[in-house]
Length: 137
Image (cartoon, rainbow, N blue to C red; front, side):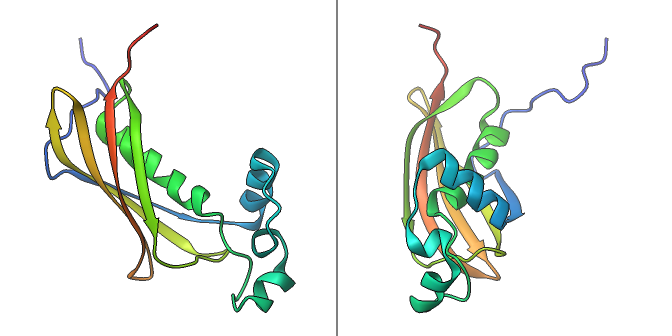
């Protein structure tokens, strides 16, 4: 029997990058989910008054792209146990964000990852995540 698309566990040093252009429609969806009506995120004129070219991307929307990378590296039986990220720069709607996660360590306590968000070669965010096996309760 041939198994198609079987998951292959990552090795230390393996990384995945996922790129996505973040849109106004996605801003609206996240506003609905989060209830965040912060002016620079939902109002172009307020964003421009703050010195941005367009509305700011919700930082957590950009960071959520990293979950795609993490799930592709860790596989379907792991979950995020901890997630830490520092935002170095603002991002605006229409920006293509490249999210990268790299497996840095693996052990009995789970898997550690280095996280990076970039746009046009500029670092937007760096961070760390730890994933652990999913345990049924």
